Length: 176
Ligand code: SF4
Image 1 (cartoon, rainbow, N blue to C red):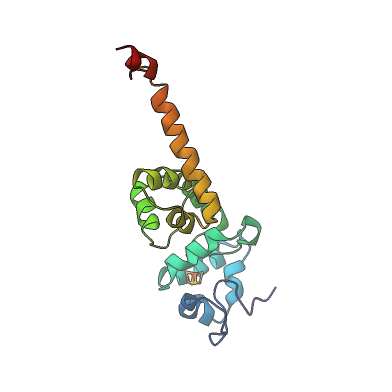
Image 2 (image 1 turned 30 degrees about the vertical axis):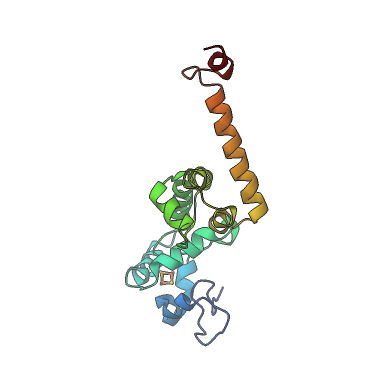
């Protein structure tokens, strides 16, 4: 199979509808782009593709782009990683939970949140008194959905407080 137009590194830098980082992709300018899709058993070719990535200036966006693809569309060598390595990275990302990262994304910095971090974003939005619009933007959901999540979290907190055995209950307060 001949890949003349790589998904991750288009060979036509003048194309208008591609992410800007792709124009700097080292693999867009090599003579044998098929090497990035070599049979995984072909150790020499896979290794040489990975070597190209080592000096590529757009490793980070390339990897991020690959991890955001559906698994079936994520093929070949990307950012020096094999599909198996990216499977591991996906699993790590799924369970990563970094509060500073969550706060940055809630603050408007572009970034991908793991499943755990999406839940934490709701918690932090309530902690910080953020608007549903701000949460919606971080989670890339509708403001209505974000409002529901904030409301659920607030209700759950009220319930937790009301049923906390270490706290006096309302009827006890009344009797005191
Ligand atoms: S990191 Fe590798 S696969 Fe990604 S754009 Fe650069 S050379 Fe191509």
